[in-house]
Length: 111
Image (tube, rainbow, N blue to C red; front, top):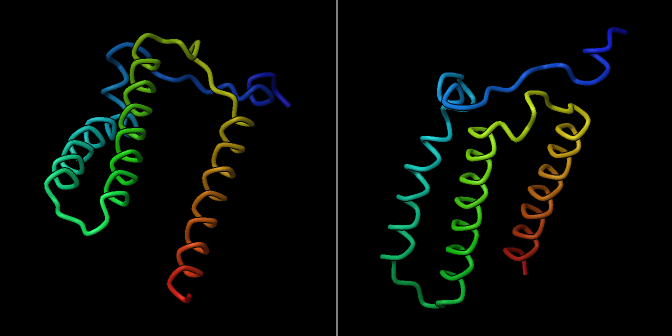
């Protein structure tokens, strides 16, 4: 196995080159739609304000995480390479969160 393949070897863009690659262009859409979500959440009337607060918290958290990730890419804090092992575990953790949320919703709807 080649050393580049063993360490993950792919390079990540940094600086304003972030805005020239396909997956990273999605940052712009995340900002636009994140702002729309804030507007829609803040302007809706809900019977239980706690629910609205939770949705707003999740929206703001995702927006802040996206902003932090974009800034880290722009300043090149990743060092130009990625670790595929960390990326695979990140996807597994996200998948587990989604599965947990779906099954919790099903349990809640059936009760």
